[in-house]
Length: 340
Image 1: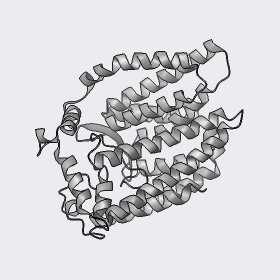
Image 2: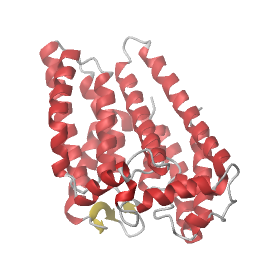
Image 3: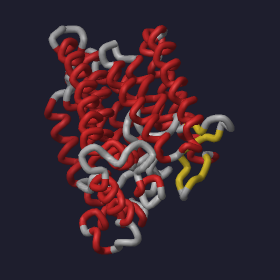
Image 4: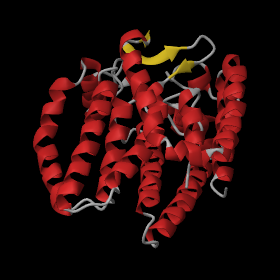
């Protein structure tokens, strides 16, 4: 339970950040806030059931992801949510939870070299199918996170390194061709990151406004509700993708450092738990689950904060426990509740 406290404090920061910039969303965020805590304690009580049936829940979420691809709510050219009237359900966020557990189960099955090769190929096929559907929504941000989770888990798995090396060589050769599968706006985000002066009022606008918002906060911030860049909507997506910039503008460098400290504390507890399983002979599955969870949180934090301060391209990744939204917020607490 040691990891619950930093997650709780992060969500408090997120709640007040949203309150400072979008009072019209505060009741909805409050609903997600309490639903997230209820889900944590409910899932934790029956955690063994969900862990034992992780493959079943994975395929349920995978099916919902396919349904989303055809009948999902379309927003800005993307189909990522199923409209449940009272709640927009993003299947990819919940799929990510059971994706980690399912991979850990597959990759730790006993067997000789040929069996481990089959396990790897099965895990790789599941990964490809999942990322393909997410990429086609299109949701480049989540596709990147799924890919990084997969890479982290297989690198720490008992799969022979020769198999993994061959996989990496294949991936490096195939990587440049991904450029041709990107949407035009995704290509523009990358080029505007490399050279923001290409289109100051276009694709680079979000990144530039985010940097201005972070800088305008100073050391102690402008105060709750006094962030001019975020509250006056110069900064787009100020409550979701760019909430870190909104937070720093209101609470300053000091507030931003508190957020990073809380994330570091959370990751410390998770790494400590992972090392505990690593020292035990028959706990490789639980170790891989922890490495997957750590990768999920770590890369989301790094990429989101990085794009908010202009050192990474904009990819549309939420800041765990802080960004406004239901699916990402709930899935973050659910994944903590399922920690072995």
